[in-house]
Length: 56
Image (cartoon, one colour):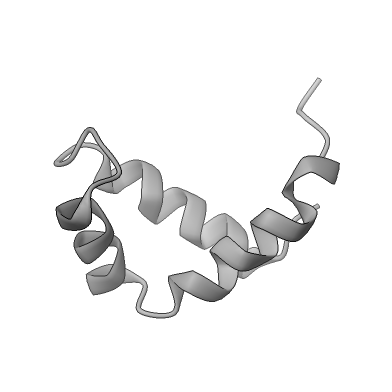
């Protein structure tokens, strides 16, 4: 399981895709607007994300 803060980021990330389809500067600016410390969660995902199990 991922920490709640990482799950929160993933939700914000996906919701921001309604307005921005690509991971461009405008997209990350919107993520930052709703989740200012998102870089910490992105760093966590880079380290531990591959070890997360999918839902069965």
